[in-house]
Length: 127
Image 1: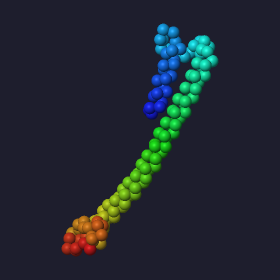
Image 2: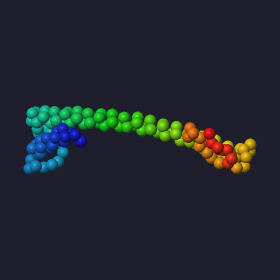
Image 3: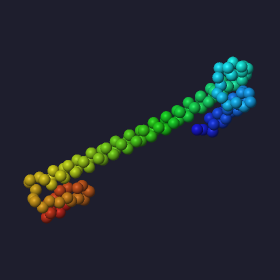
Image 4: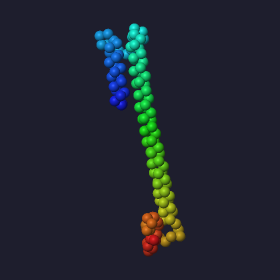
């Protein structure tokens, strides 16, 4: 909560304590409002409007920050899904190559200079 909102709430609390006899700390009810003079009502309405404006500004800031966070997380999720799909395809292709009947019986997984994993026979050297 921002300092200005806290300060406004403290001011409202002080005003409401002054309005009640013997320092009672009960919320304003209809009877209390009816017995207030016009200046006190105006002051309380002004404080209430200022608090509402500050609360709305704080909500907007929070909503904007959360929107930015959601966009960033969606981007990260998309990237992670693409990476997972790529590695799933690579694993599936290697598994199919390992069980391909056209390959010799001595198969292994190798890595070429480009960093790609591939299935090769034991006597072959990866590119």
